[in-house]
Length: 243
Image (cartoon, rainbow, N blue to C red; front, side):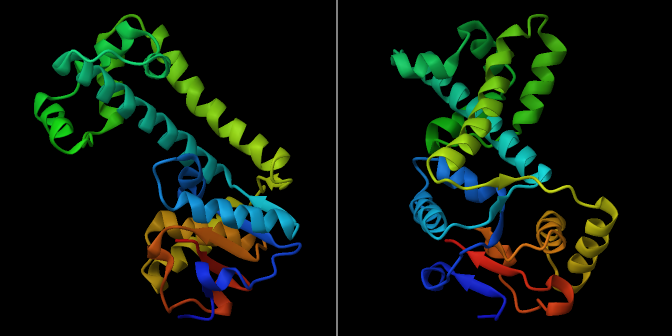
């Protein structure tokens, strides 16, 4: 494995004292998802960082936006699944599930904008393979009452903010959002796309972390694992492959 990449096993031997560590959205989303087996590794790593007193956990604005966006999409998927289950199986939701659904009329109207074929797939495999943005766009174009959507957007924002507070209070980790030069980040990111064959969004993660002077970039995404990294392109940054 490249000298610039550290896997989860080797991470147990790394001293993170006073380190500056950037994370991607998948890292925090796995921590928040009780059904994601990778969340355990994330939690263990956060415990280690807490004990070894890292200097800062860096979450860029782009990563924060991606986390909130995914929390919102997952919320809508859960609602559609529950409503479809109620409609097709005469299912009675629990008290907790009713809290997830929120305004029942809004939830029932949302499902109107999902094609039946996609709902059939939802029954077969338990996953909704349909663009959540399209559902919301159609809803907003056709429904006059949008008040019921408010709680879904609020849930995503409040979940993210609550997680940041949890990192601060439970783990005693200092979370920062760096103020970076967008032109400098873009120049390096596009260079990484050309030279390392990275997805453009992944390249921006690496560029932001490197320019911010981070020691590590923690990710669950295997796309970052390659042999093209050099000191000239990412400086002192190490890629920490969590799972």
